[in-house]
Length: 369
Image (cartoon, rainbow, N blue to C red; front, side):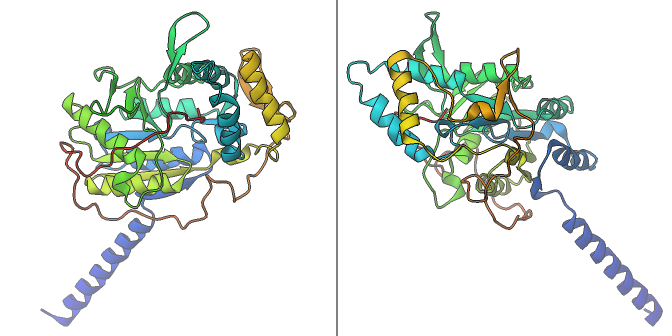
């Protein structure tokens, strides 16, 4: 081979290597940061133009709180949740004369706490994914709790309240799952989770774990995918899109996707940071709120809430103008970590086996909605 040809081949290989490096650096695979729906849409637009993209082999997973819906108040996790929970346990749970009232009280504050879409474009964004053929689901750490009898004498559950919220926000996660019945995903367990109903996977909460295989959302998603395969859905899944406000959740889901030999696109959505954080925890005021709930089944709004939010004629909450607030980086759901990019998929967890996944445990009193 002549020296000139050898030099040309060497130059060509260098050009190809540089192109590959640039493509890797610009890849949407891995975990991306998005501050708005427009940022997320750019990522999806890039994905859907790839020759290898197949909507039928893709699932889109959305976290609920601080990703789809922002909830305001210490009782829903924005503020001193631990202190509020301890106070609620002290005031509400030790009412031995009326042990069944907990479900009634939960119905009241689940329905009446302040809740807003994180961004108004979210329903359009979700519908756009569904229109492309991507099946979308909510994957939440909430429980689908049995809340007893409602004011009309009918049995109700936490899901019925959340489902109504979704409808009010024009979010419909039932689309694409009509052939998969709602079910308990862990029939052998006495626990209330995980559940799949109307496109929502209720994972329940878990303690800190040392492996992604024991993460509550990984356990729930794994069981759901196994269930979907049993109904001839997502048998050839090759891409998982996960949108969450917590990087730790995305890290666990990314490891799981790689174990399943699936491409992973994680979006760390930080749209909720424009909303305010509750004021410093006021024990006296929160005690009054809980006492009013216990004695009159009435729900007082968090202290100072009406200075920040207003409710429109349709009963939907909105943030008042000039109330935008940049959340402190010390808030639990914000993490100052380097954003990781995709690793090569490796290994595979058998969807026909649950041996590697932990059975989670849940406290009988969960104060978060």
